[in-house]
Structure formats: C-alpha cells, structure tokens
Figure 1: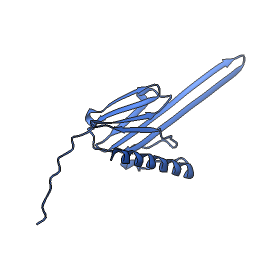
Figure 2 (figure 1 turned 90 degrees about the horizontal axis):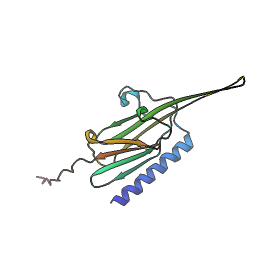
Figure 3 (figure 1 turned 30 degrees about the vertical axis):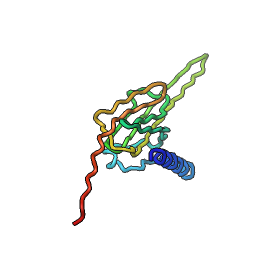
Figure 4 (figure 1 turned 180 degrees about the vertical axis):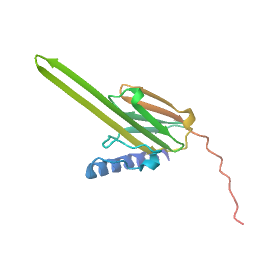
Length: 151
C-alpha cells in the first residue's frame, strides 16, 4: 500500500509540474485570501520542491528554500494540510572609482500540500539548515474500526 501511495504522489507531482510548465507559473494565489486566513500571496512566487516521507510514527516534509533566513519562513499546519511561505529581499551596493553598482534581489516561496495521514500539528518540529527546511510532524493515533450491522 505504501508503494502505491508513493507512486501516486510522484504522479501527482509530475502532473502539477506539467500544468505549471504548460500554463506558466501562477501569478496569483490558487486560494482566495479567505481560504488563507486573510493573507495575500506575493504577485509572483516560486513553489519549493518538497519531499514527503511517511513513517509509522510521523510525516516528514523537506523543502528546498535556499537563500532565506529562518525568521522569514512561515509554516501553517493543520491535521491534514501543510502550508509553507517565505519572502526574502537582499540589497547589495558597491562603489568603485565613480561607479555605483546596486542590485536588489527578492524571492517569494509558497506551497500547500495535503498530508498523507492525519497529524498532530501541536507537536510538530521544524528546522532550517543549508537551504533545506525540515518539518517533522507526529501522526495521530489511528482509531480502531468498528463494524456496524445494518438492520
């Protein structure tokens, strides 16, 4: 069953990339501001590549988000959904013999994914190192199934 889920996730990711390549990167949010708790997305953003691994006890998400400070990363988590967003702005200026060089770089990231199992958002842990954001989220207990007889 786990292999089937992984294959489905890879297929879903491939389809998402195909649509993005065909239609171009979205220039506006895929969700309305009401669905995001009143927040608005930047006009242009880049969805980070995300790997999601499911173990017996937790769901682990790793996202590539280079060039950020951890303070600029925002994570929203519910029992079944993970949202990651970040913005960065860097300015650089050099002055040499009457020559002024100035460059402003900015970037925005946003990605929302459905999680493969119900999780406990209150006990999640996140770390950011070398451009990789890692979020470890414990799974909630699977409730025992109870058969109900039809009368």
